[in-house]
Length: 248
Image (tube, rainbow, N blue to C red):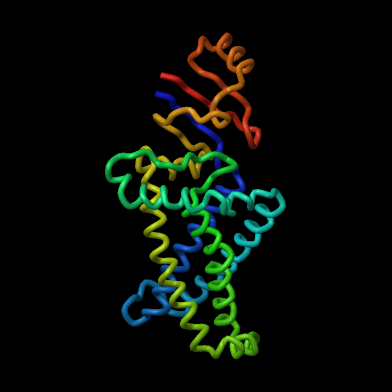
């Protein structure tokens, strides 16, 4: 069995992820307090609105930093699916999620720094980050300052339309959190992907070695073997972090 660790999640991505995750959770909880004020009385309505607004600006700033990081580094490419291979890979991924996973079949997608997301994740995240989240941010800004953004609100059809968009997306994000957390438990252990978002390293267990992905070049492998007795082989990888390969 080949066990390997590979550095997938750089520190800026992990920081963004956890700020965004906590922010979205806070927005959902305070949004529930605001929307169902008569049924939920954890905070006063005014405090819930204030906390909701402050958290919204934190998520907005975090989103802008995400945009700057991914576009300035060119890493935005990991969100863009390869249309030439998308149909076949998407079908295999759907088959895995709908059937294979319950049989214990291996995930057809192998995560690497350049190929972080499977085709279904790419399609979902690119829509989430460039359509859904911006729509929620803008609708939230319009509801925050109705008079200031009155012209834009009228352009969209009025305050009821904007409010409806914001509420529907609120329910979407609440459902997304549940689905996202469930899918995150589908690693080789239920907490493996959660751990990776703290350490940056994803672990691969029991997969066949993929040429060019985890294999060391022959000269590097020979040098590592002479130093380690063929038990461990370490090679500097992307992000200037080691890819650690362990052979049992």
